Length: 365
Image 1 (spheres, rainbow, N blue to C red):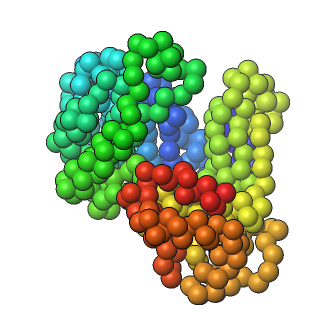
Image 2: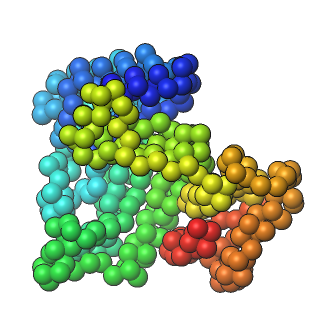
C-alpha cells in the first residue's frame, strides 16, 4: 500500500487504469480485509475505469473448507469489484496433483467452480499443466476434457518446464523420474489445441484459449507493448519506455519503503531497437502475430528513434525489414518451411512454427 502511494505521487495526477491483476503466488490466502485495503489503495490513488477487468489469482483449497465460508469470501471479492478469477488447477487427477505438491484435489476444483458460479462469477480462467513426468498424452487430454466440462470462459494451457535447482530437476538427475520427450510434448500440445478449439475456445495466444469475448485483457497488455505499473516484492513494470524490477529481498523491500524510496532494483530505458524487438517477440506469441505498423509504432515511441516515422502498411513494411535486414534470409527460410507466415501486413507463426517459436523469435532480438 505504501508503494502504491509512492508511485502515484510520482505522476502528480490520477492515471486511468483499465485492468488490475492480483497474482504471482496465491493472493487468495490473504485475509479479505488485506485484499480490501490493497484495492482501496489502488482506487484511492488511481482512476479505475468502471468497466475495468479486475483479476484475482486463487488456488483451489485456499478459498475455505466449508461452503458457507467460501461463499462469504467470494461475496466479499464481488463487493471489492473483483470480476475475474484465475484458478491454478494444473491437473484433474489426484495422483498427479500430489506428485506436483499441490494441496488441492480434483474434487476441490469441481466444488469451487460450483460455488464461483453460485456467486455469479462469469469470467473464470483455469490453468492446465501438461507434460508432467510420468503423464501420458491421453491422461493430459482427459484432464482437459474434465476442465472443459466445468465450462470456464478461459483456459491457460502450459507445458511443465523443468528448471535447474528444483526438486523435479534433482529427481531427473537422480533417475527417479524421466522428463517427457519433446516429440511427445509437442504432440500433446497440438492435440490439446484441437480439443479446445473444438469445444469453442479461440486459440489467441500460444498458451491461452478463450471463449468469444473473454480474452485476458490484462495479459494482452504485455503482448502489445502497453504500459503497466508493478507493485510488490520482485514485481516488474513497464512505463513510458522504462522497464523496472522491484527488489526481491523482503528486508530490502521493506527498508526501502520505510525510507520513502521506491523499492526498485533494476531499471532499463528501452532504445528504439529494444522497443521494436520486444514488440515482435511478444507479438509473435499472439495468433494474429505482429503487424508492421504496430512494430514501427513501438520503435518511434522511444526517445532515441531515428528517421521519419513512416505511414501506411507498405512504408512500415519497408522500414521494418530495413531494421531487421539481417533476419530477412532466415525468416524467408522459416516461411518456406511452413513455420512463419509473412505477408503485406506483418508476420505470424503457424501452429507448427509455435513448436520452435523461441528460435524464430530470436531472429528479431
